[in-house]
Image (cartoon, rainbow, N blue to C red; front, side, top):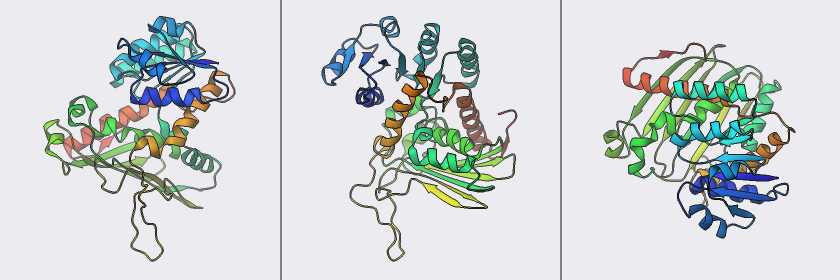
Length: 331
């Protein structure tokens, strides 16, 4: 199997490394719009070869991964499905709901498999959490709590183009939590503050935020996200139900200090960032992508479902600015 990777920045290079390590992948082809960048990456990564343009890449692969900037995703994704090439596209596949809706319709008309790179769906512990919920082992869900804190803020120059904390940081949980619960969100309330640095306010954003989701069955979820955790990168999801209470994301590297005797204490190797915290997820994501290409498993992250998280992110922003809950229709 030959897999293409378009975009060899930090994320694209990580994906190419994981793909090249898979036994069933014979070669990874690399393309980047920046001249010379793909060749440089290929020289440093065994099992890869650089190509000069997207058309060449798409003509010689069994599947392609898109890790270029968001504004390039719609054009590149349409090029890939136009050639019948199964695609894994980093989130988001488009920057606004109207554009994404049109793109999703094009994807579904094409019949080509397109996966969206929401890595939490591929994390083994979260994947198992989803399986247990769907199998009825948790019972009726009462409450979901998700925490997602960066260890350090992003580069401040990135903030004006980030889309804001709900579209950038919390978008992952806005995808994952409804996927776990398996019900429609009917109401959103969000609040945020600037507590880390004035640069977030200057970008018309916040650096700490809390979201409450209400589901059609009456269950609630609380999502909290922040741009600075002095102990390390922290992401966990707790689900409390009528039969069991489960958590994903608590292990010896979780940046959390308990004050109870014998309780959890963060070690020196606490997770420094999302690539380390979700390493198993990213490896599993590439493996499942190849299985989808071969028709061995169902698509675990289809394009249409990515519309839900973007709609919720926009509702969160509306709620934060208005200070009132936002009703959700038709998600």
